[in-house]
Length: 281
Image (cartoon, rainbow, N blue to C red; front, top):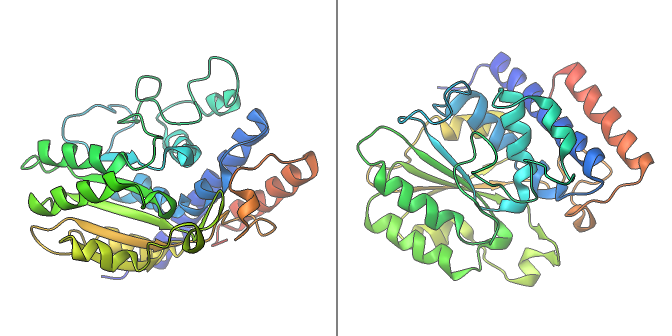
């Protein structure tokens, strides 16, 4: 069933707010892995504000859905969504990059409500998610993990992919943030893993490609899970690096961003306007 336009519009507004939270953290810390955090923000917005069974007032409730940020350096996207969703006070965003912060450069489950696992050593998030999904079978709880296309060459991903298919983990969904860029260049040139969907399918997954920055496509895909019974789902979300900041979109140099005041102010103005009009970026 198609997602209603007004619901899409509201989710786009929430995504703009979350992207603004990312820039707020960068203003606090002076730098951060902005590119991937921005590209996957529409996915996290759909998950946190519409799809997942979660409760900010009871972040450890037993039947909750679990989210794992496998590409841990994109954690500002998760922090932004958790803050906007009410898991913690937004004032905490202003401690990013400061000594003793609860918002480290990679997520820490011991510091923040809503963080389910410590990640950041790339290629481990899917393995953690497989273990969780096995443990949660029959409970009704689901596991979602966001991976980066740049982490796919890690061999542990494919061991986990094989195990997920072997155990028929239909409660597991992996979303690959396929923005085509990583810190050292284009993923196709560093280590080409295309076609990603066919690789997952070869391991026994049900796979689907979508536009990961088209909110209606993201929601429609996430609300029709699993793609096939008794199979894990891989959603290959084609995205734009640094989505939401027109001066940075699709540029490798914004993978890790250390902006000057002019760039920061321009980013804040653009996102404030996106929130005001409440539309797609």
